[in-house]
Amino acid sequence: MNYLPYNKKLVSRAKELRKNMTVSEQKLWKNYLKTFPDRVYRQRPIENFIVDFYCPKLKLVIEVDGESHYYENAQNYDQERTQILLSLWVKSNSI
Image (tube, rainbow, N blue to C red):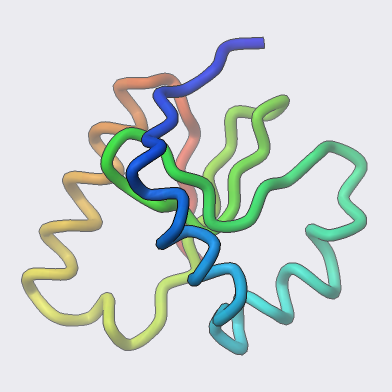
């Protein structure tokens, strides 16, 4: 199993985000990912990003995009994040 760069500076923010997940993130977590056969982490720091969900076994990142992702600067950020994650051999999916 390959491990991705884990940014310890983002741990407290990731914990905060875990406690305050969006409604969509909560539904996906409670209805599917919490009991997924392979371990899935919520709000996982990778590089300089906190991804919504990460499954190390599948090298899969899932980002749940809400209305905040529709703004141009957010879209640029999302594209940058995706490119960096892809360079780390992670499959990135936004829903």
